[in-house]
Length: 273
Ligand SMILES: NC(=O)c1ccc[n+]([C@@H]2O[C@H](COP(=O)([O-])OP(=O)(O)OC[C@H]3O[C@@H](n4cnc5c(N)ncnc54)[C@H](O)[C@@H]3O)[C@@H](O)[C@H]2O)c1
Image (cartoon, rainbow, N blue to C red; front, side):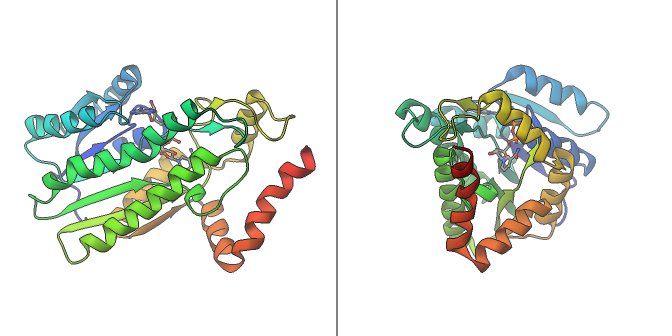
């Protein structure tokens, strides 16, 4: 989607982090916004940040894991804006846990948001985008949709699934008015680690506080930089958008030596056990 001015973009998980930064950067481009999040307070804070921009902003309290709520969100976007040109399926959560330690309840919670939320978003908005001269679907996967690491089996499963789902959609939409982008961020400074559920890591020395501190220490890319990279990718109609130097490097190394990279990512954990 080359021109964003005057378009209407729906963003899930817009109450924090990458979603909030996307909202601000799209508003700067003159794009109208239908923002949703499960966290009403975060959503209102984002809306307040957007008051300097002369674009229409609506807010919608939505749990992406609930299909009816996503369908209602799509209806509300039409009644509020009269059209939808883009959906950014961004809402996401994390769990730090071993495969042995993860409960089915936590696994299903994460899949509900990180995978099913994306499917519901695509299926609820696709018919609306198809009514427009051009439409764009942006699904946020992760570098963990390309490369795995220990203690993240639910997260990696969901992000690999988002990649697969999005790439099939891309093939099916080829030649139509719908563009599709799959986004793979590396580490981005947001609230994701702080809000993560934490059960039992395979590395017993790694507790929740330590995990958050490590995340803060190693992540370099800001949410604003991530949003700018994603918007640049959208404007260039890129099918695959890598965000941050770490994501680009790990993607390249994984393509070069896929088996070795899986082993290397596990070594740190083994050494610390
Ligand atoms: N931060 C990173 O390092 C990183 C890396 C790769 C991918 N991502 C992905 O980027 C996306 C955005 O994450 P972020 O880093 O900005 O995290 P964040 O925690 O700052 O923001 C996530 C937002 O999603 C919302 N959310 C959570 N559950 C929801 C639900 N059920 N329904 C609706 N909204 C819900 C939260 O309230 C929050 O506002 C996620 O899909 C995440 O997996 C993040």
